[in-house]
Image (tube, rainbow, N blue to C red; front, side):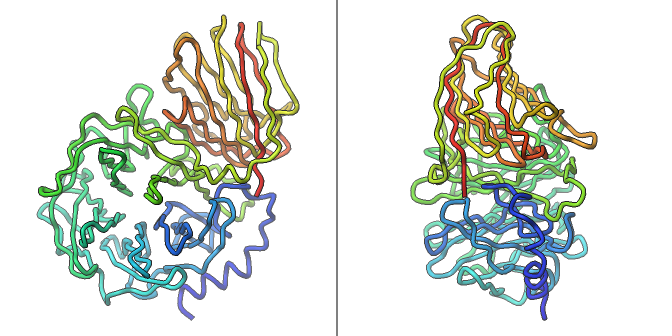
Length: 477
């Protein structure tokens, strides 16, 4: 029995130990065990495929496999056999990578991690079963330019253009900073180094992981997950931070040139390693809704790690806007709309708005107030809240009283646009997460909460007059 078969047998025997109530309703989680980065987010044979870094045997990071699932709506997932397992074909752990549909083949490219050295290998399959196309890694240490080693050389992103396969890979240079290297191939086996697509000048942390590169409207986007990033103002707080650059791509020189500084892709506590997918004239993105620096997993849990609900990306004035993918609309029930006014520190609660698994859309207008607070996942003991300061034009999300049982980052404040005293919020609530989209997705905040599911109240308070138009839709499988 090889390692794939061992992993599949293990989760078949153990996955039923987890009750449905112990999982999110519409955020993807592993059957059992640990999950981190999304991998191979792709569209193959008319279905969305999601692979993920996976350790079936524990709720902590361990021997890295690729788990695998497919879906038509990102809510109901068909759990497939483990796609990759360490040491089954090419020796080493199966670190992160990407996938493309190439005719009738589903192509996976990923990092093989062995004793600190990292190289890239390719497997091809039919959507369920995958085999290596070569007996050795295909993008190897020997392909690297001077100044780079096989340490921290990982996370390939592949695409095909004009009959040529291209791949970018993160690599650490001799100064200890991340660079994005570009390679090309005509057959997926023989690869040639082309150039440094873009490199860290020291302003943005150190190592760059999980690069993503795609065209959005008329610009190119480079996304990097940055390690050891220092905060600046109200950005870059997490240490492990996802940034994006907007710019131009010179296909002859194989160079990317940003037109502005890096921006934060998500301001929440828990967002890392996003992967994009362009399909049917939409650009979708999914990320790990977790953070390396804060282990909040409750004692006794049998799974750890969830994904964001996939988002649709748009570029407006060189800023990425992101909102939940429209597939979620098929799972809305019990729509309830209402309008109300807040005034003078009087708490407002409409029990018809209460829900723990829902989408909540709010149009908020300041009439004469400084602050407004929205309490979520709340009861007499627990809550998470959003505080809007109209005067300072800030939004704070707090999970301080969400049920945390250990010291953790629990409050985050960001700058927002409040035009003529108005702003809009779209909030995705699930059993173990809150995703907040500000002003049509101009800014987003994704965070875990581990609040008892019976805490489902939603309420409002303001220190002056505020008008709120609200629409709540429960989300069901």
